[in-house]
Image 1 (spheres, rainbow, N blue to C red):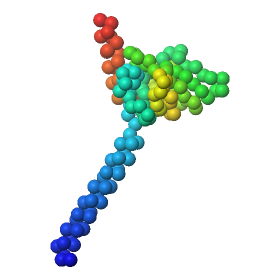
Image 2 (cartoon, helix red, strand yellow; image 1 turned 60 degrees about the horizontal axis):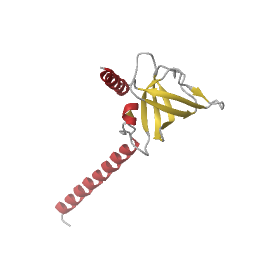
Image 3 (cartoon, helix red, strand yellow; image 1 turned 90 degrees about the horizontal axis):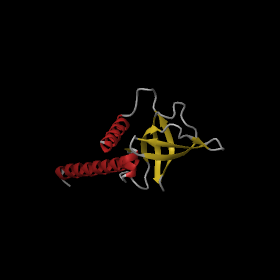
Image 4 (cartoon, one colour; image 1 turned 180 degrees about the vertical axis):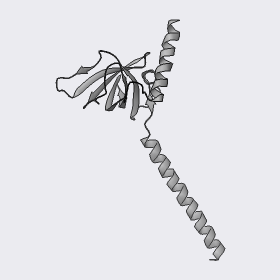
Length: 147
């Protein structure tokens, strides 16, 4: 093999390797990506089926129900337009309260969101931008319906 052919062989090999590495990284990223959805989007069928995703909104006042085992919890999340019942088995974060923002990760099946993780906002003024945007859109939609 001439030096020129060796160089071309190594360049083509490096490009193929780079393409394979890029493919595997993008594929792994896509499989582990968790999207955020509001209750309205979930009820409208925009959320994925058979995949974990995040539900965000506000916990409805007086909707928190603790089971007698002390670990199972049910509550309702709203975006001021639609409500989603959530069930969770585990310990809630200290900042979790009714009437406050929450993000729950889990799956939607048979009309109930089963959460594997519940995250509460860290102070009174913060809500993830996606959650705030979804709540604002749903609230505006509810206001427009009333007019």
